[in-house]
Image (cartoon, rainbow over all chains, first blue to last red; front, top):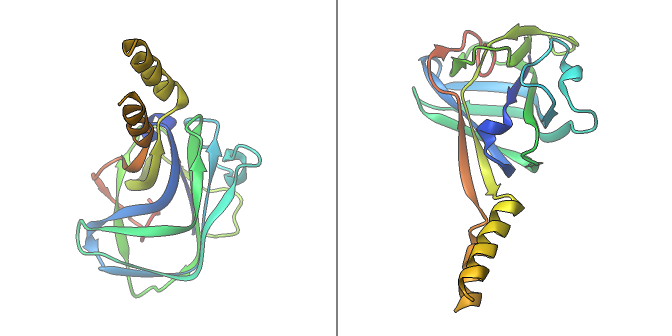
Amino acid sequence: MHYQVVVLDSEMGGAMEISSLAWQRALSGSDQGHYFNVDIYMGLCAGDQLGGTFEDNWVPGTKTLVFSADALDLTAGPNEWVSVALDTPYWFNGQQNLLIDLQWASANPSYSFYTWHWDTGVVRSVKATSLGSPSGILSTQMSEMTISGVLVLDQATFGAVKAVFTGAGR
Amino acid sequence: MKALILVSLMAFTAGAADILVGGQGIQSSDPWCGS
């Protein structure tokens, strides 16, 4: 499976050192899922919508491997969240959109771990069931996610606060 | 006092955050992330 989604910079709210991703399990299906040869990449995306060719959606030079595992086990009850801690935190600059790319070679077919999705109204995800396929199926639906890390206020904000304080102290 | 407040402001320029993207509405038809 190859699955790519774009998160808008307006949704991120600024620069952030991302340390984990989480998904919310839906009501049906299994309470666990088991995936093999899992890789997660992060990088930047210039557009607010995705094209069908995976590699074309990256801002050149920004694709970064942030998680890799031979096996990944996800466990959650209905509506519970399951989190994946990144091997390497990703520095998101807050200036462009965030592209998240998940790949796994196979999964245990005995389990179906379903998660919540939402309809964005525009094309914000691409999926290919064959990992080696260079392109995938476009969709306006994408995963509901929680992106966790350390959010950093931009320098202008701090500078403005400092200037106000310095002026008030005179 | 002024220095103390400035240091405090600097401490608040970064902090842990959870960014929720999207919401419930559609159950994925494929396991995990596929829609």
